[in-house]
Length: 391
Image 1 (cartoon, rainbow, N blue to C red):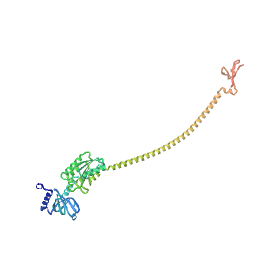
Image 2: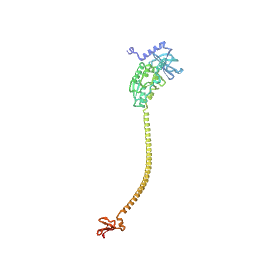
Image 3: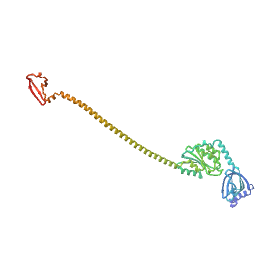
Image 4: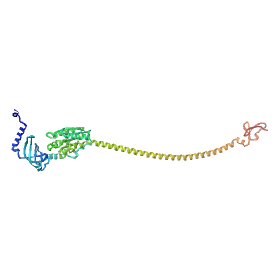
């Protein structure tokens, strides 16, 4: 009952394989296309041929027989289309590959690059410098995968205080360029964002095409915030790399460029502290030495001044004493003269020499003519008195 109504996976795959095997137009044909990815394992080359409509996965055995093409080269590949039942995948098994000039994707890349360069999109004077220190980063990238995690890890390691704001976008496929441009425009008006990182991991040429579009280039050019592009591997170059203010080879490198190492800041602070501390100690020591020298100088000067003043005082004291002695002697002599004069006028002095003073009623009798007979007179001696009468 089951076999009459349903087909097994193997039956379907075998049916598809038979269709491809029987189709003459898919056997031993030559296909023209652009190499969009290329890798070799065990001398087997796995690559994609691409044009503007899509891609064709190819396998080339004994790949060492041929020169390795570059991504973006247009080649001619000879082989047949095969369908692998086990994997359920279609592949073009190539037996020969030859170069055929530059590819369409590369030509479109160069055309847009030249147009934007003529418009001044790559001009150095339009480049905005990155801030020395950031507090918040805007990231335009996929919300899944290693890219955003690498940015978070590097940022956390270098400075855990920095915030990351993610605007999740498709980074390849249909509509990716519109989402990327929208994310850039969003952060352009985001007031608290210091810098924007636009990032994705490595991929084929067609995977990176959203970053080779004019809409993304224009959003990058018009962004008010500095933009760091980190698209693909170090060897990959896209249009946004030329328009951005800085190109980083990887998303991790972009975070390294943007986020300052807080360890360096701590070291700088320590060095500054030590520098200031040493300078302060040196200054204190210098001021102390200067103060001591000044005190010594003041003491020396004051001692000299005191000594000079003491000497001056001594000299003045001697001079004053001398002058006093002179003055005192002078006045003493004058006093002696006056004393002698006074002594000469003292009526008691002659009495001491044996003279007698005659008085009558306390009046000194100066002449014998003044003596009257019968009157009583007092004789004044140096050591006493006596009474007499005049005759």
